[in-house]
Image (tube, rainbow, N blue to C red; front, side, top):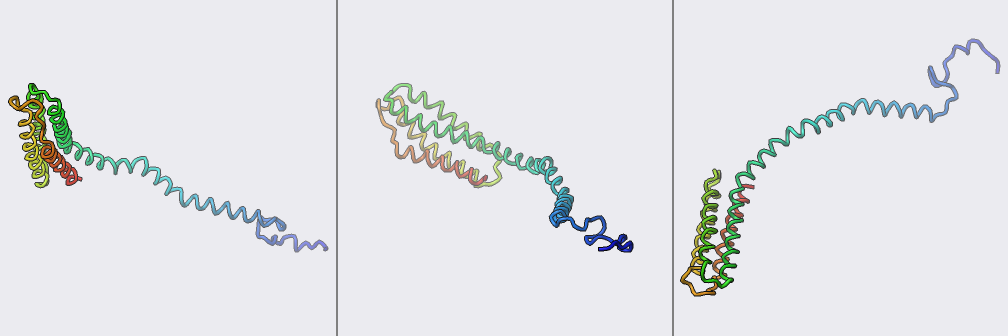
Amino acid sequence: MRYDPAMSDAQPEGGPGTQPHAPASRRQRSLHTRFVLGLGAVLLPFFVAAAAGALWLLPALVAPLEEIVEEVAQELEPVRQLEVTLLHAGVTAHRLAASREAHGAHARFGPLAQRVEQAFDKARAEPFSDPREIALIESARQEWRQARALAEAALAADAAPGRDLDAVPFDEHVERAAAHLHEVYELVH
């Protein structure tokens, strides 16, 4: 082929700035690189926004929910304490009745029964918004009073030594009282 000066000003086949015999993979790589950079430039603001949301926005959204959960937990704390005290009193009554000690059993059960009554008063003093919650606490109190009467009769000083606590009705009353208190949890949640 002969040298033609008119052809020297002509552009190579691939356009300005390309070599006429450059491999196709280099042009594809260049296109791929440009695509990735363009995609990165488009997605970068979204990644920055997501990072800012995770560091600032998410805690700002979660903080009020944590306050609500804390408020509900504080509202239910007296009910939880009441349930624990009530169940502890039931176990203690059984233990005292089974110990076969005639003297002192009633005296040891009395303060525990008083603590249950105080726990009922404390739970009842909470500002429950649903009247069903108040009714359930009162129902639990009635069940406790029936169980307490059975326990006090079995543990009375003039009762025969080793007099067994009538376990079935006593347990039923304590379990129903605990079930009513558990329903309060379900209403609040």
